[in-house]
Image 1: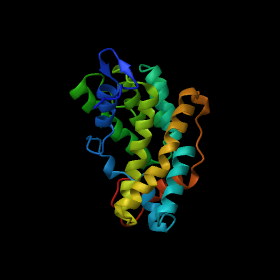
Image 2 (image 1 turned 90 degrees about the horizontal axis):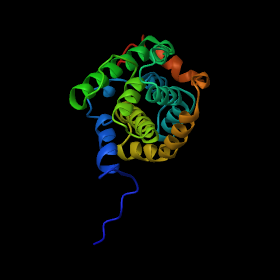
Image 3 (image 1 turned 45 degrees about the vertical axis):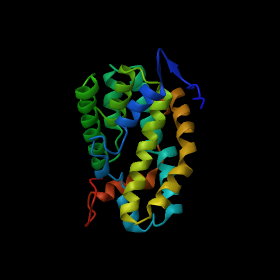
Length: 225
């Protein structure tokens, strides 16, 4: 049986066997950043009834990806990748968090990601926002930027779907249908983010931002955001 030649080749190792597997480890649900404890305000939307089935979940996550933190974090990741030592980019990522819980979300995950990757794979362990930490680590390990952003967006969407599966609740198959429908968006956002300036950052996922603010006073909460 003939084995297909890998599309990407880096030295004597394939990109699939090295870089992509490293991304799969870093952005896996099992990676210890505590992603499963955050819903990005989705818990409020479910409590309000705004998200109640696969269609409404897909609509919500699409808006967050295209007009909210998905796009914004993709741009931050790309700039951190190209300028890992730029402290202003790192500070801006914190400054633009729209709520206390969203700041906690990116702070805690970023610190945990940087600490774990530094301990296991090497690199800096500075406590920075999550997309900054991922961008810096990918640059240190010379992982292609486009694939890094795509994997990051996939992990972000997957985590929100996982939260909805538990909260709505939805079946696991419905969750995977939503993820499959969202998958083409990742490449589009990643490609745009790679060409975007920091001045292009600006979100309008207002319902998501307000949901994250209101989550702070939600009477019953399973998630930290």
